[in-house]
Image (cartoon, rainbow, N blue to C red; front, side):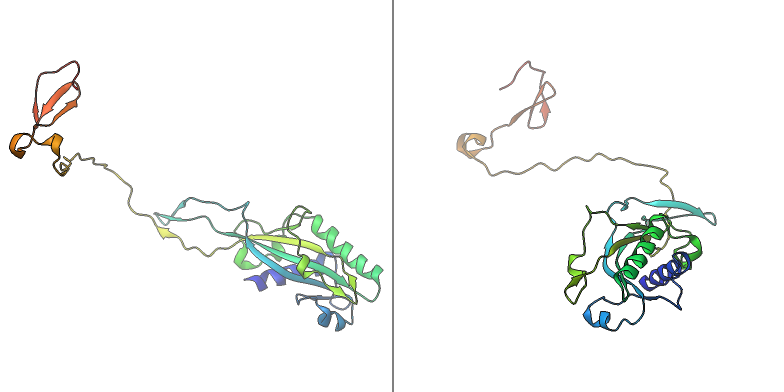
Length: 228
């Protein structure tokens, strides 16, 4: 699934920036010193450093729809964020800055990946959004490449997409009747004590007040104004 988004990003950047294959390489490898030393042509590196569930777009509940005369349902689809750290590599710093600036303006010019570049598996779902992370969001400090002691600038690009991974299930028949029953609770049995027993240990009648009446061993007596 992730490799499909990688391919879509590469196709989009090559076509729109543009980044022709004859002049610029695109890589998704970790941009460490070993990789940097092997770079021989201008390159744009898109390193996927973080994958997480999108908290702002998380949903709960159940979605229902009719299909072939049946009612089917499923929970909302999960939405995830793919966070890429994008750097430019070239022999001259000005060429790196030009590459990085071209990628930046291309991504800022749109809020979602055009349908022509969206993989088939993600069509018909929520549009795949593409954005530059703000300074208030988490920064990939652990993934910044330092080559020969020089800090390389980069962009944090966030791609947000739905995953169609939850199947529809047929809903049960609608509820037509609701029945409510009332049962008599079993009396609680407590250990006898001095207050509950009479002479010779015989049980003493228990008086309880119920709705203005006094009930003695289950028999209703005349209503009283107050019973201690």
